[in-house]
Image (cartoon, rainbow, N blue to C red; front, side, top):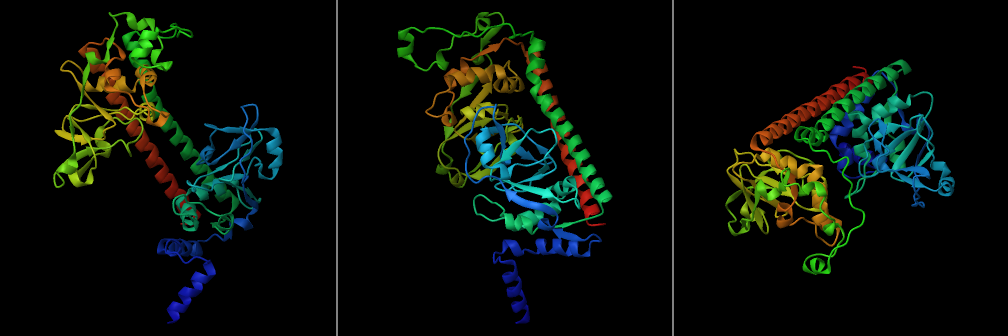
Amino acid sequence: MEQIKKTVHVLNDSGRWDYHYHQRIFSNLQSQFNVAPFPTSRVDEITEHVIDGTHFTPEYTDESGVLFLMARNVKPFEISLDSVSYITPEEHQKIIRCKPEPGDVLVTKDGTIDVASVVPDFLPEFNIFVSLIKLRPKPIISPHYLVTFLNSDLGQMQIQQQTKGASITHIHLEDMRRLRIPIPPRPIQDRIAQIMQDAYAERRAKLAEAQALLDGIDGWVFEKLQIDFRHIASPKYFNVSGMKMNSSRWDVLYHTPVNPEFLNNKKWCMFESYASVIRDTVTPSRKPQDSFYHIAIQGMNNNPYSAEDKAQDLLGEELQGLCKRFKGGDVLFARLGPTIVNRKSALVSRKISDGVCSPEFLVVRPKHDSDGRFILWLLKSELLVQQMLTKTTGATPSRARLHADDLLALHVPKVDIEQQQAIGRELEQRRERSIRLISEADLLMINAKQQVESMILGE
């Protein structure tokens, strides 16, 4: 009975009755803080203030306005200006209380809520939306140490304990204020922060190198094939006969004239010269107890190489509707507009006998004198992506799709089998090196986090 009373007291004291908040993993973390050699303080004890950004949507403007950052602009240990918004100076003055200063700490508040970064000196004046929390540290704590702690498992576990919300998680300001942080002497804080800053810098370098390997494949191939588009102008004005319009489509993109370069039949051909589109389909639910090797577009990473990364063995009863059939050696081309841009096409290993896939894949089968790796490069290349986007059909961009006949009619360079194989090997090697660099970057962060977390706990 005493244990029950004690438990109820703890529940009342915390103000939370949900199971998530009182999991043992969180209480164990507090026990670790209690035996650590450094004193702990609440966030509101070591900061001048804890406030969030504006709760109303200000008036946006062009790039001549004031930077306006949201949760998507805050990454671990860095501020990203990709997809940044701008507001008018007048709107900025209305919400001046939210304006961060260099040395403040920004923490994402909604959705992804375990990311923090220090505001650097070089950023121009800016403001923030409600999806961000602004912390202004007191001299007792280094802002870089505070960010290191919040981005560590020790900080993220506390944040996860305080999260609320069913579909979109968030943390309230009062919950952020009560987070507890060990406060070692300032030299130790600086050392901990430096270890993580160095690790993230090395991680970014490895990830940039991995991305450059993938991004550089088009240039490598074009140089090898002696293809140069730099001096070929695209037409700005053109006309189309009414007969042609009446027989097909009326949108401008579809009827954009073919680049004159493509008319050189000694250098260019159509995609159908290398591959066919297989139209075999099956309804797995008609064989509910049969097993199907299934590959779905949903959940597939952007720009994959191997189709097997997300494959599953499923019973027919688990698959609803129509599926496409494929065989080993096929290329699965994701034909929806967004998946074309995100290069969600992949190669099926020849070790796989057969399987089924999402109906929004086109199953591309290389002809006997074609290399599947080369075809995969073609489908991901900027050369074909730009052609594809002019030929997609659909009421909205998210549902626009490329039809098989339009895919087969795309213009591609003439490449013999030996050159195809050389391009395929280069693509494969770049993928392998890229994966290795990403793994090294992940391991680097795991080791650095373990080191700083041990230092924070005084171990």
